[in-house]
Amino acid sequence: MSTYIISENGAERPMTEKEIAEYEEYNAQRIKDDAEAEAAAVTALEARKAPLRRLGLTEDEINTVLGI
Amino acid sequence: MTFPVFAPGDILAASDMNAVGMWVVKPETTFTAATSFLAEDVFSSDFTNYRVNVNYRTSGTNNIGIQLRVSGTNATTNYNAQLIQGTMNVATVFQTLARADFPGLLGTNGAFDSYATIDISKPNIAAVTNFQLLASRNTGAYTGTFTIHYIGNHTTATAYTGLSFLVGGGENATGTYTIYGYRK
Image 1 (tube, chains in turn orange, purple):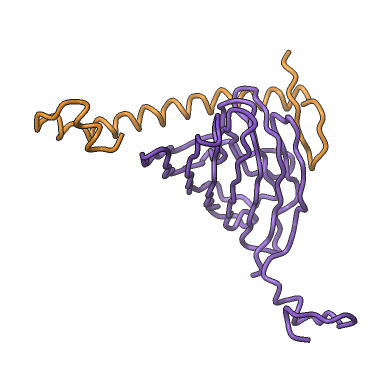
Image 2 (tube, rainbow over the protein chains, first blue to last red; image 1 turned 180 degrees about the horizontal axis):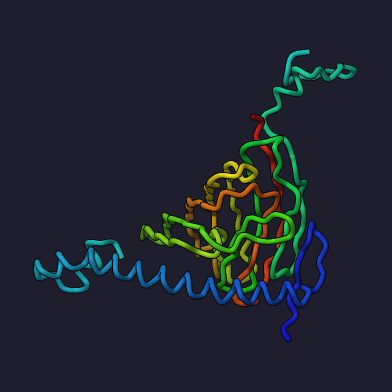
């Protein structure tokens, strides 16, 4: 089992089993949340690129226009 | 006595003390190589809005998420956030909704001291809690500077009393934090 350290009001101690379970559940959820947010960001970026592609710009030119 | 200029021997009058704009509710507190750190019993009806100052570094690239907390239990749903980020010459706008945390403190990937201020509105009132975070983030090098401006909210109508900071991926963080209440 992993050893996680929790700092409670400035005093460090190992997490209890209950705290570890809560932390691991949180960690799994945030991985999912971050992946969904990244996918949404990619979709939004593609939406910005689409009209520039229709104008015939190359990918490098599009990135320059968008500042990325 | 004219606030804020005090002379030796002056009596601290209530009217002067009541004019103090910020009050320390959690003096500077250290966390060392911690996967999680808690600030218990910092929010109360004494104040409506709060300021949290955090000096931090993280062991890896994972971020430090923030959850509100009451009676020993973290609120694990209903956080929404919007990021405006600048790095190198690029600005990024990023929205992330229905999260398990307010994803405020971004990882430094090692010993690159970073600094964040977080304003929290109404955490101890059973209503929406709003967050505003501004951070100077250094990641991987002091030339790896990021401007971080996160805003967001937590929509569960609960009166919270504390904060939990959680580093993702089993990584850890080291630093200090101080919490202030704004005078009503």
